Length: 352
Image 1 (spheres, one colour):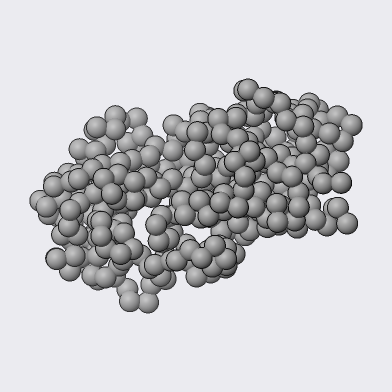
Image 2 (tube, rainbow, N blue to C red; image 1 turned 30 degrees about the vertical axis):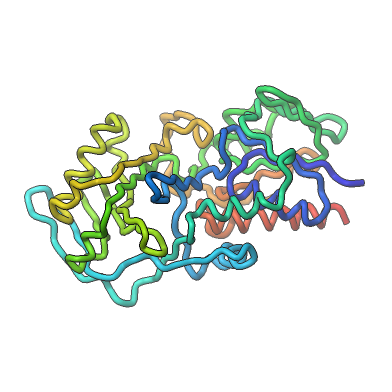
């Protein structure tokens, strides 16, 4: 009989899992708490410019992700790094200009934005297989059957796959029977990728930094921005600078962060940085569909790929997935892809 599978989370790992399972004739339903798909992939289009406020780069050693992009006919282009970079060491000195190493690892971006991966995957799914604004509240397992209750509906399933961050899974969903205590302990000490990040993007009419033979890359020890890069489109028809803001500025208002970021861009690249088209940012710690407030410190990538996530529970029909559970590149897009493939293979073997 065709197995009915519910997938919690409509990010890259959840959608890819559904895509792969459907190819193998399983019945799939994705439950996504947000009103959009993509999870920590967030491509925003403002005034004709697409910029990434979430996952952005991949590298040649991300073999599974690159293979997926080829399968979906998605084109990659190298991150623009032609020219010098700027560096701020201390507040009392002017930024220093330095030459980037020529043998540095090339990072790549996705033509049309990272959201293209999501868009091309869901093109292979039916609309009734994707449920938005369905936040899972309660999961009951009884007689080899799951009852998954959301804020609005109840879904029955033979197999459930969670692709949301483990810490969010343990803190936001009630289980009957309860999750095993060892899983709860590790889940609450598993770092959630992007949860502390503040990403920004500033649009411009021209790439004025290139006229100065600058790459658009900048690094700072004093903030607010810690890193900035050229974020222009693959065909150079729109231009932007984008990067990360220090978490020290998390409690500032967006307007305050914007003023400070633009001031710092002026210090790095000159007064032309004042002539902005737009300013966008994403404060990921405010996204309750990614993480919940916590006073406990978890170090970056802590317990990502932990062995406890590798074996299904509840009679081997509940899988804990998502990038944080991947043994390879946990906490990155490559990890999300790797784990989706791994879980689908596990399900296939279990049905033989």
